[in-house]
Image 1: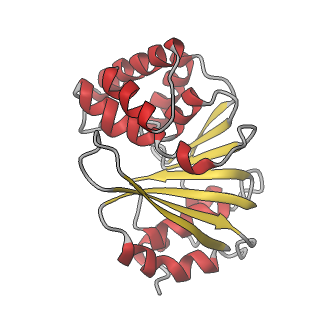
Image 2: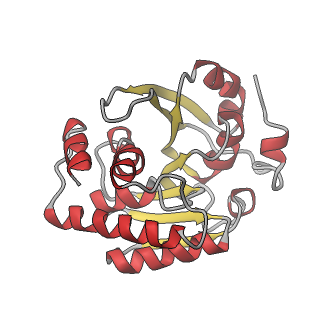
Length: 237
């Protein structure tokens, strides 16, 4: 895990022997299960270290100082970025939201193999689960990686954020136009852009950004709209 260890140090993160072992197990399980279902197109050892694990750990730079927090990963897929963050900070309380039951099965298996506690896998769509009182505005931090364009993503994620919390979206490539397009949706959902954080990490050969959005007001009850509508008819500026 040399690529991951070196890259993490550039983020100010020193991984313990136990954490490195957990990432090794994560890699093996990801590649094994990927033979049976489509979890990722990246399966080479160095590629997973850098483009999945290190990329996921970049969100740690935008979470803030507190560790006694509740975190939701929306559209968790193979568990990225939520599980790498949980490996880094075992004390966080994590919910992985995944719409596909087979992928949720992988996540359940992985949690057991890694010995993680205070992690729940929630099967369902964000448009539905965000109206459930158990989850609505119940999280200090909400994460999402490679799920949707930002106007739709704001509607899918910000309803889960508690007022005073924040949403962190991982994006590749130039984001200026996408952020501008999403400004109306972000405001309607009760959000306010805190920062568009550029990540300059040599190991990641393309430009990466973290879009950090503060939740400053409650999301109106009618949002998110029914499944599929946020993506089909996004609220754009």
